[in-house]
Image 1 (spheres, rainbow, N blue to C red):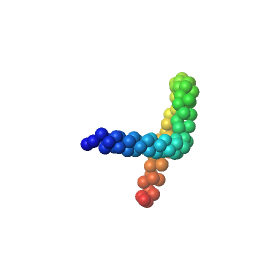
Image 2 (cartoon, rainbow, N blue to C red; image 1 turned 180 degrees about the vertical axis):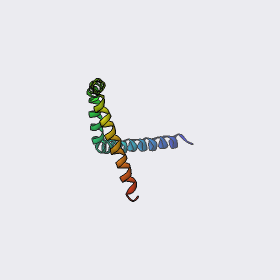
Image 3 (cartoon, helix red, strand yellow; image 1 turned 90 degrees about the horizontal axis):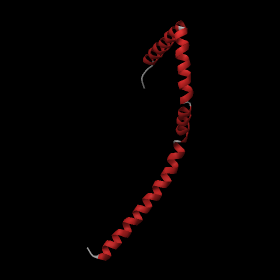
Image 4 (spheres, helix red, strand yellow; image 1 turned 180 degrees about the horizontal axis):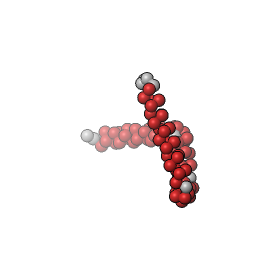
Length: 94
């Protein structure tokens, strides 16, 4: 392979790389627009982490003082979950 062929091949590859970079930049913008809703939701969840930690601590102390309330809501939750499973299994599958 001559020097001229190598230089031409190098120039072709560099043009190809530049085009791929431009395509990636355009795709990046579309990707960020498509996932913007999920990103905002995730950031809200991450920002609420400290409040969830404080709330869970308060709830733990409160549930020790009022155990019947927690048991009642646990039974309701299990009942709702069982009802949902029964309805889901009764509906025809797609």
